[in-house]
Length: 159
Image (tube, rainbow, N blue to C red):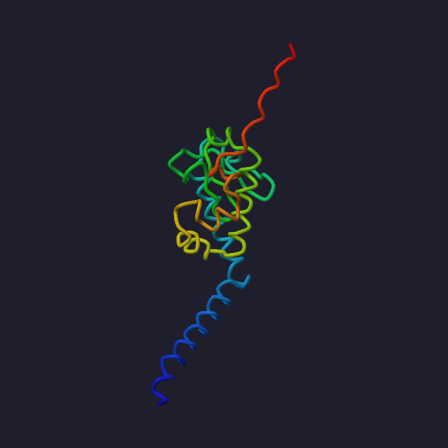
């Protein structure tokens, strides 16, 4: 009779062990060093792959370091945030508004919360931004994944 309870007990132990492992992995003692490692890697990539004087390849914009001198092959879509660094090109940077920087700042905070765990978590969330929990949290419209509200119609002069 006791044999039937064995798999249940192991299953509970497995879930408890997973819960403890996830709690430890998401503890700030683990995530903060991962965030700083990712930020260092993003900054190094922005400096090494960027164009122009080295001192102009990174600049601060609010919460973010922005590397906006990169060639288009050096990042995904319109830009990519790695740790606290937003990687983009001069052409993309010219089109980016405050909403996109706010969207990327949310990704920076996600990196800070999850550390290097952000990489597998983001990949597991899927490539479709409309279903990716990280893109949804950052704001689909702000990130350019949804069309913005229609612009108001210009007023016609009274005749």
